[in-house]
Structure formats: structure tokens, C-alpha cells
Amino acid sequence: AVVATSNVDTFIVMRSVVPIPCAILEALVLKEPYPPPRSWAGLATVLLGAIGYCIANQGLLVESASWVALYLVLMPLDGV
Image (tube, rainbow, N blue to C red; front, side, top):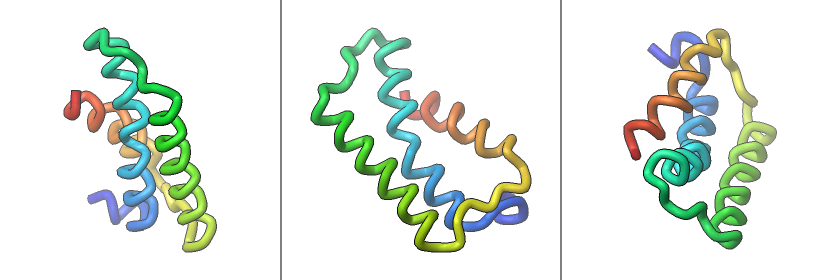
């Protein structure tokens, strides 16, 4: 269903950035401490890698932004 409204590259990028909202949600909901700066540096590296992947390949193709929003909300909820 996702491939009908976007490409595989878009799904890969969205999946790779899920740990970022997950880290924030864990801190807010579970009252866990925020990740240390070294972990944020790792998450930033993942985000930069995802952006670089988009630039190097076809880029993001999203005809329906609703699945992106749902994915970035529901996947961290599932993980927490």
C-alpha cells in the first residue's frame, strides 16, 4: 500500500528516522532521561545518512503525506 503512494527509498528513510521521535517519546511518556549528547550525535548521523541517501538516489516521493505522518507517530508509540 505504501509503495502505491511513494517509493521504497522514502520508506527506508522514514524507517531510519523513527528512533528520533522514539527517543523523545520515551523521555516524555516514560519519564526516562533524554539520551546523552553522544546518542544524539548518533541519531543526527542517522538523519544525515538518510538525507544523503535521498540526495544520492531518487529522493523522496510522497504523493500522500498522511502515511508519513502516521508512520512517524505510530511506530514510536509501538516501540515505547
